[in-house]
Amino acid sequence: MDSDIVSSSVDQSRTAMPDSLAFKSINDPIKNKINGCAAICVKKDDPCHFLRVLYESLITGGLAGVVVEAALYPIDTIKTRIQVARDGGKIIWKGLYSGLGGNLVGVLPASALFFGVYEPTKQKLLKVLPENLSAVAHLAAGALGGAVSSIVRVPTEVVKQRMQTGQFASAPDAVRLIIAKEGLGGMYAGYGSFLLRDLPFDALQFCVYEQLRIGYKLAARRDLNDPENAMLGAFAGAVTGVLTTPLDVIKTRLMVQGAETQYKGVSDCIKTIIREEGSSALWKGMGPRVLWIGIGGSIFFGVLEKTKQILSERSQKSPNA
Image (tube, rainbow, N blue to C red):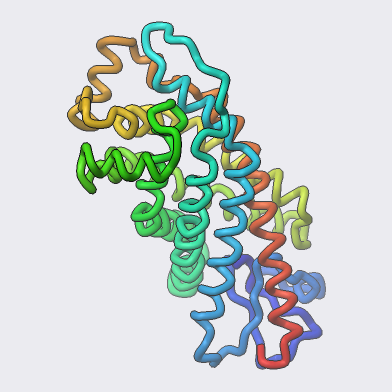
């Protein structure tokens, strides 16, 4: 939710959710014309305020997550196979969509859950924190959203990556055999490394994106259009993707090792990789990862903001809104 702005045509008893209090410094007619893509207008004292934000966040997050995964899955598969290859192992270019169906089944609720936590948390923090600490609100909300959604994202990621590396033929078989051989804990293999990667990733990506949007709006003195949202999303994704590549390599190695337990944990994984393959191995797959997350960021945030805009307009037109 992006703007502390109310359209001049909206009744004074309705207000928009604040994205950043920085917009309070704008005091001219253009402020009244900006109806942010993420602005969802509700009555100030509406008891259904939270539920409405939660509902719209679930829809926007779930839709955006599914679109990105479906569109860019082959690049993700290539990245995974590069990261697990050792000693000059050959990369298999067939079956680049292995595990897509099962992955989408998990991505939808995981993405919806992330935004169901992220948006309300962000809005609450923006209200209580000083305007110069808006970045803290975005960082904290992103990290919390990542932590909560990991309950669904980790099993989804385990099944996806093992299918991408050819260990299983279908998602149901993967789930059944993983539990049979490793127990239920096998579905959460690499959970600590996942959090080590995703908490900073989610926090940084959304913080960079939100802060860029705030700065861009202040500079342009207008709301952003769809290409601009996509451009900022691509930049935020690419930068964060580069910074977290070593964490992604560690997470991938721990998740796909299965019952063999070649690595005993995060620290052992790092030491073993550096000892046997050199420190450069921690950056394996950076090219496909940055490409995937960069393009994915543009699609994700583009779809996200457009969906928010559509839901916002429907909310404003509804006689009960």
